[in-house]
Length: 244
Image 1 (cartoon, rainbow, N blue to C red):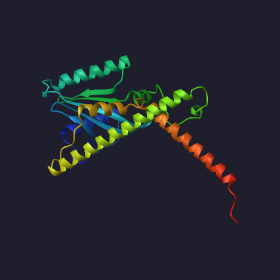
Image 2 (image 1 turned 45 degrees about the vertical axis):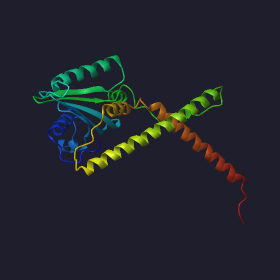
Image 3 (image 1 turned 60 degrees about the horizontal axis):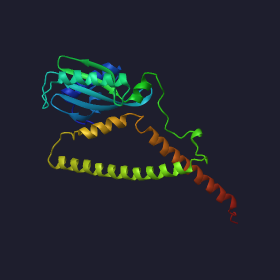
Image 4 (image 1 turned 60 degrees about the vertical axis):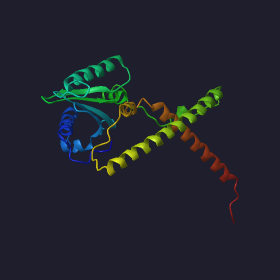
């Protein structure tokens, strides 16, 4: 779940070569392979993520790699998973349902590849929309309209949820650190693979629409609090007598 520091194996190398061709990258495949972060790996398929500079800035991508002629523990060949995965992603895109959007796919005699990204990133890259700004805007300034009760209730709920989310994040980080220590003690150089739940969470977070409202609200609250604090400090400065 960290950057692949060791020498990339054949699967990662093939994945990197696909990325170079699909995105017309100037980087060497070996460099791309080292930047790939494996998220899940089975005998017949793997999922990797990577962040790359694009025309809209830094963007996250998922790469699904299938070993076409190999059968996994699920009884399916990589070819079957490749065909099924591509159909699922294309169907989700056509119906505009949540989930990654396919950008490119290809296959060789040995491997099949699907390149995907978050819906918001896909739309921005395709020129359909610009990336959503999460900074507080002038029109977002809090007003004193008849919304105090709603604001108070939702702020209380948001406060509670953020505390719970932070506690869950701390528990997850502790588990990851424990797993890393266990791997080191066992001299296990293998990566700590994503669980299915972690993969689903990571895909959700790759979509800039998933937590866009949350980030915008947090930025607005912080910006407003900073403005109010600055105003209080200015008022204090005006009423404070200068020292002799």
